[in-house]
Length: 167
Image 1: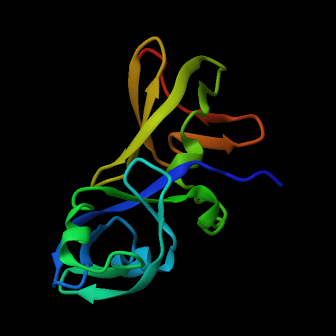
Image 2 (image 1 turned 60 degrees about the vertical axis):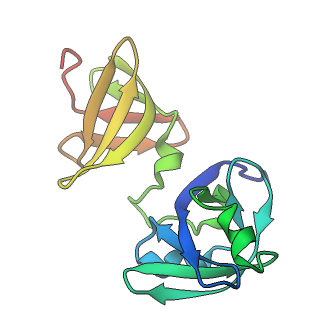
Image 3 (image 1 turned 90 degrees about the horizontal axis):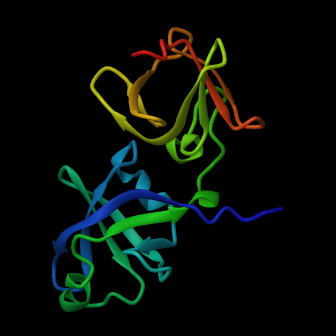
């Protein structure tokens, strides 16, 4: 069994809470406090792990206490840093659901077989998620099942789309 060492960003350290090393967390998980279910955290660009000792909802955000972060000065060094976990820490997605990181790097082809490029990244809009496809030029393709996204095939490492290659 191979270990998946890709990092998935779940949030960032957004502020300080109290004087005993607690931090305010901006969470990108749904629900917001779901970030507390993933421990250890990788905070910042290195591979240093921080175990979550406790945490809770606080107002519109989340606060957490990390092992080894015992005072406000230690917590201040973490301000603004991303919180990520290893991909292997995430539960398997439900059928027809995907983690964005699993789609990144997949080839995108039209139903006629025209190669459009590879998924560089994704972003959310109010209406739907959008694939950013890097090829001979960048394309923004809405991630709308059956209308645009026809198939996601991880074995073949491709996404088949109903998309005009001229668009």
